[in-house]
Length: 317
Image 1 (cartoon, one colour):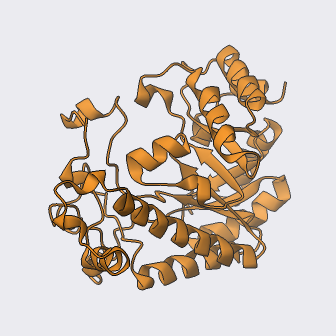
Image 2 (cartoon, rainbow, N blue to C red):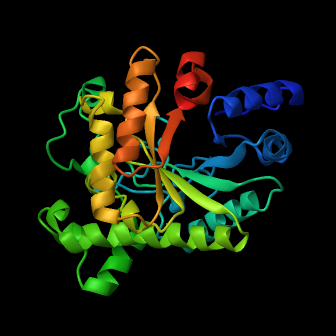
């Protein structure tokens, strides 16, 4: 849900009441801290949990002041002036202590806002090495190998940190994409950052959730996101089946794959790109039941504004 300070408290309460009576238990809201302070009170009144939804690694507000914080691809191009795919892809590099401290303090401050139930991490990954198969034609791409222009991060700090640990520069390799140590090094950088954020948020007695790629295996391969090791309270894998040219039945299959790798250590809510023409009441009911049978805790919708009355009836059946 994208919040707006222009919505009156009464209008917000009416929206929250509708969703709460329709079986929705929480909202992930994007907006400034001032909005969260307002929503925390209304959420408490209506029984809706409010989780602050803020992008993590993809943050473009530091481009001019701190260009050295930003990710660099295998060609030596920084996202400062060569953003991949789209102009808003301006990725920070998790190897920088300043980036780590900034993100920890930001999420800690969000968690401390009265009435807030948790913080939600989005874009908590590297840039896409591979786009979903359904999106590649949009960019005139056939991504059947790791292309250097989409391979991150090769900034001086990443390379030096790896070299000091393993004794060689990944750029000295004929094909860095085949080096398992270099792959693991970058996975670990992000895992360490996310765990530090989670520890800080948990100190404020708040929960941490994240939007992640469909399964840990897919995430590691496509965006260097080893979310099976994040140690968060709940995950909302983005099971947008159309992007992958998969049927709706792929959604509970992903939940089963997640449980086989991770066990029951955290809650998992299957994220769906909600289209009422695809998720008719019958399809939604079947998908929900299959997700629960596969070990999931429920569904998360992108976005709340598109949930119809017919769909809400399914959730309260």
